[in-house]
Image (cartoon, rainbow over all chains, first blue to last red; front, side):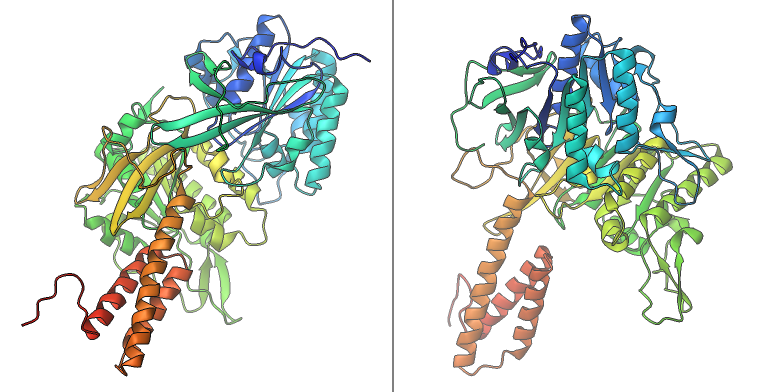
Length: 261
Length: 351
């Protein structure tokens, strides 16, 4: 079987690093420490899809969608047709109250119709998102809505908050396997600690785009690298990028030659 | 989008106008770096605008908070303070431990006097859940009494809350739920947190919508302070590390200056661990020096037992990572020893 033609990420400079783009239908990891620009980068990939008439889904596990909507406004991207699935768990109840599984209740909402205020936990019931229910919901959505690009933001939140009583490593692996089998192009964001090892999820995907954040006297310096890319060649260098009014812009013509990263 | 002033002009400028309203943020930094003072600036700014503000104190009893903040001459009388400091743990079985949530203790700062005494018959235990219940109840009470909702909340600190109350429970889910709870209150909240382990991803750091980091390090024997913004969702910000000082009027951030570290390597990653390494090095030097002087005193058969006790206290503080106290005590021992050995530091004039 031959590798399908690549699709563009739409992130200036990144497609060049990826020698044309990403192979569709596969899961990729976008990793980096908090505040490195993962969500913005993923949004650009979805915007590129929307502009090509694709159906795209953003699954929010860290940030309430109302805030996401406000945060993306300065970029002036047309994300009106983006489907946003609110997979943030409610406030947990400690008294025995009915816990609703997300799959029975939640539907993606178009970006344009998102509420500007936060969804409130109901008084007598609360939503709990488990990896199982989310997977079930996504499975149905993939069939009925035929998404081609999906962002899971973040796989860290999924592991931390939605895998109570599950074996984390195996369950994460199985979730990524599920995404692969669905044939959607998926980006999963992954939180990386400032000092320390990259979490094992990074090894499970077909490719990893890593964002680096370094502080020196002139402020925060941002760099991007392609750590792994199965089925394709890619640039081995670490390149500087900035978050401008157009989102993430990689300066792919000037590699940073260093051992510091 | 509405911006909320942090009460520190320089920081507001770095944030391009202030924090985005109704979201939770983290203030991080090592012990003694000024996190609580920064959080208090934020509350004072709210009180000046007539906004209802709530301080949830887990680390220090309200009486201490009051005494510490009196130094800056701030009027905190209208600040509501929720005392979530845990009681002395009862070790005897007969005492029943009750959930702190069942005895709501919210007071005006004005009324705060002594330390709440642990009850003889029962002791209050603090958990994330009970604190959450207390805040919720206080929000409802406030709304009922005054038709006003709290606009600003400070949790001081998440570190204490985690240490006290989350053993054995799944802290990640508890914190996620707690932060969801704070978001749903639609107040702007600051969570004070010490990063205990930089090699793991702590929940409050990646769920918060922004992180303000306070730095402190030793430069020779001068303590230097700086402040940086590490993350700020939905807004541009000044990404440089700016020097700051803590003076009579509280924190001042110098946005036209740049904080620099005395170091050779350029693209060095600076953060808590680096600063901590520096202060550790500094204190170990002082301790080593003092220990050498103790040996010397022994050789000369001088009585130094008292100083040795003090020195062991300094080492204990050091072990507990209470660097400021450790350094102070170690320096005191060092100078006492020098005096005793007749080698007064620097200029010594003999008659």
